[in-house]
Image (cartoon, rainbow over the protein chains, first blue to last red):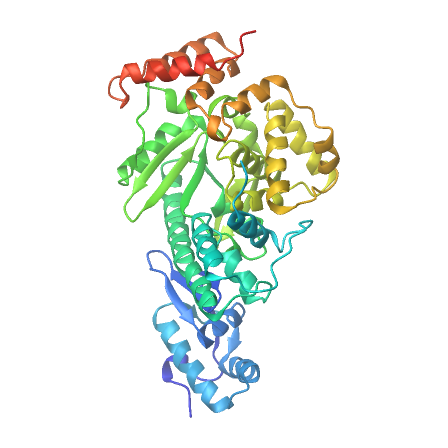
Length: 98
Length: 367
């Protein structure tokens, strides 16, 4: 499976947007995009993904870390991450560092 | 007054990860009769985060249903906190454009400066300290932005000269408190406001720079909040106090020097007593030694009695405020404003105010 086009391919590096405020909750993270966004709950593996995106990471790196953490098939994890990452990117919550 | 069982337990939960707190969490899950009031109290004390964290880490045993309830509670609290943080950043820009310099106080600052993870500290209001010279401009900006004052100014000029601050209500349950000083009544009137503004700590949210009080003043602010409010202070306020406690001899000297000059020695002593009682906290040295032999100035104790729990009497605080002012002209203006507010500002009939004043005067020492 290849990642969705919106994730920019395997070499692209991702991180949380500087404009995203966030707080941890027990089952994920609450995030809000400045200047006028509303709070959104990112749950489950999305919460773990959000934690990892504190620093720049590629899709390959994210896949390796989360597949090991959850002991899942890397191909399935990769597909789920790419889809979640695409959703976060669409909402401006993650971006690619210059 | 004796704290309830759920307050004692919540105090243990709020403090379990703090240094020098001898907190012992229960090893078995609570029954539903004990759990329900604990969860309600956690919400009113804004302690949903510490409760959920203690459960997530496995420090507090709960049933699966209790865990679901505890994990759901911080979502609303943290959503509200992020909305306030968003509003704060927007407001900072608006006020800066109007030439108003602000210092962020209470939760919006301590969450980032004094907690390892800001998720440990939720807040529901935005609290800003504004220099007296800029209070009128700040009020204008907030009124233009749609804020509605909770209380009118008793006399022209009172906001900038004497008040603790001005509160504004905005839609979506948002409250913004513009503080001129850190406490109401005589204690607030003795604080050196220029000194507060001269000692700040910078921090960032989303790359935007904000100013907070420096750590000694954050500690003193937590002390005022703990000692001058309810009989049982909010547990998050006491957590702020512990988290900002002086860490070095130099910091301790700075705190105690400011407290002495601001006539707040008794406030610090009373606030430390509250934290010790709620958290089984061993006050770190050298502050612990100071607490054991702390001077308790008589005048400060008379002031403190006007704020204490069920005996608190705002009219008596106001009367003590007259004595806290140095200049005769200030005393006269302050007394006139509290005794004879302008007709538009006074929502309370004159006779009711007169009765309150008489009750307050009756509480003054005879000598």
